[in-house]
Length: 512
Length: 112
Image (tube, rainbow over all chains, first blue to last red; front, side, top):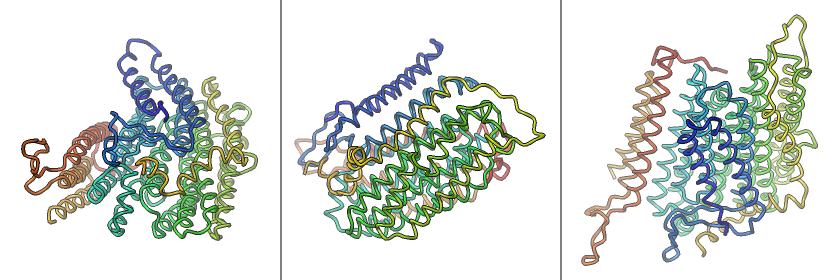
């Protein structure tokens, strides 16, 4: 039993409230309070990860004990999978806040910015911890509304257009999710994820749940930006202020999109072959199409946003391979390997995509443009940004010894061992194309100074921004240690086992 | 059963509006229609024919009650819907100030 579970939601909510109340009286309170909140969250999330036992710990809000074995009231569940996602939320959040201390100095209304930032963190932590499908919806809307406001924070033409698109698509997705929750409640008469699983096992109305599964997949697919539903992502992620882009691309699409899809389809429904083939196809399509859309971009942040779609495709495809093998009931070790690879790539993507968006922000801060054609030769004037973005680019394109190599290797090996040869070849090819467009980014931004081009006025990048970038670059290197068998068994394998062993989650929580 | 179908038709009406209208305000109204069809659906789930408000009377325990949980869900969802609509309206007003139009065809800075 972990006593810290309610603090993950309560502390950032209190932080947002205090910043709005006290921020106008005390100057600079907002940034230090937000940093303190995120530092505290980072501390307790890593402590929870390290002390997490084999069993999930459950916190019952309000102390409502189950009646006749049926859970009533709201449950918050902390297990080995949600622990990993909580760690990346608080780590990337902390570094983004430190980065914003200098980056957001050019914007007004700092109080609103930091309060919304804390609110968004509270929403994501709530989604990850919630053991109850309606609370997932509530926290999802908290994080979504604050991210709509943060995307529009610059209130220019582009920001407003991006946030409008994001809001309309996000709202339709939310309504689909709400409709699906209504359908589930109609049949199962409960909202607790573990209890829905029990009701699902007892009832045999599979075609009814197929509709619900498709609605949930569409709704959370929009939030996770898998390819047919991706239209909002490149606009929103490229228009937001850079620390927010790092949060959105690094964490938000995972916490409210991929995480919830994995959690619901493994632990709430029984895996069927049809749905798992659909999920794998969606993943493979977003992996391939996203990378081809990225290669033609000249705006740095748009390039990174499309690359996020492509890298999320890897995660969805790896998890889908695991689902297909589990549904067929063959090769459960390969299925566990594929899911481990997917989760590992999710963590890695948070680190390197966060780093690359912070680099893009530093370039925009000092040069004043995001267009690759208008820059060049920045390696001499911005050595730290250049070095860290080189590390980020090598990680994302899968060059050893950086973390991206190991996770892609695990995914490809799992695909070959599961006899998905086409998917393995596609994953390797997409990795090569990824290398190509990151080399384009490196060459046009940092090397290749064209003669006759005037040297732009360069502002020096302030220390807090450099600090965040250097720490994330080190995280990229350190995460590759997770590929070592002993560390992998300690941290990644419990999460994959929890997902593979389908009844474990439900039996731990209902106690049956 | 017919009420559920009407509820679904209301949802589709809203979706049709979001897809075909070109005025931003009308898109916001269509989104509200979709939202309220969801609320209506949730409220219908809790309804039992001849049911009463679920205040348990120990003297008369065999009454039929309506299900209170969907009602609590609808109240929560309405509050969230209010926040979403307010946010959307604020953005639409800002867009009108910047672009001088509500026509969605004129708002096309971002592409590619």
